[in-house]
Amino acid sequence: MERANTELYLENLCIMQANERLRRTAQLLAQENEQLLADLKRKQQHMAASSKTEAQLAKGGGPSGANVASAGAAPSKSGKQQPQ
Image (cartoon, rainbow, N blue to C red):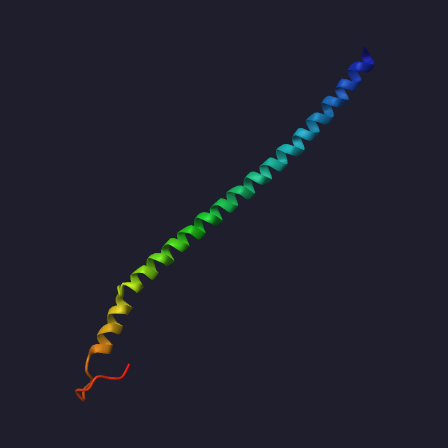
């Protein structure tokens, strides 16, 4: 009976050690997952912002687009339009 208890105790000890290793691995994976998710969200926000900016530029919106359009169409002091 004592031998069986000793074997069960050692088996239980091995299982608890394996559980602890798995718990640490799971924590590391969870941290990595959170970091990757944060990176993905940041990348998506950056992509959304840049596509929004590109859409505004394509429509000719924005302060720089208005200045370029008016500068190219305005005649110079000599009365002639400047070549583009």
